[in-house]
Amino acid sequence: MTGRRGFAVGHLRGVQLGAEIREYMERIESTFEPFGGQWLVHGTQPEVVEGAWSWDVVIIAFPSIEAARRWYFSDAYQRILELRSEHAESHVVLLESVRDDYRAAETIAKLFDG
Image 1 (cartoon, helix red, strand yellow):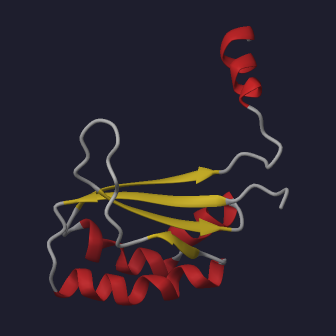
Image 2: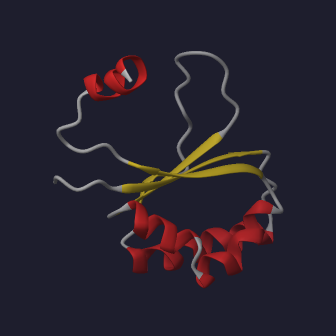
């Protein structure tokens, strides 16, 4: 694969389990599947190897960053968003992967060689 994938990464803490979170979890897959989304991380406990961590992590992969954006801002997802956001402290970011042939030297050059 030479394309750059997109990811939705969520950090959640203090999730108030109840009817709203259950409904959110029951409905979310149907909102991201039309955009090619698939679970990468969901419902697993992180193994903390440095520092402190009190967050749950969710990662959904998409074929592209554009697909991730279309999903997040879609009517279907926006209709269920408050079911989660009103019942958990959360931070969500959309990220684009590096190319398959990416090397750290590219970022070093940007940061230090200007």
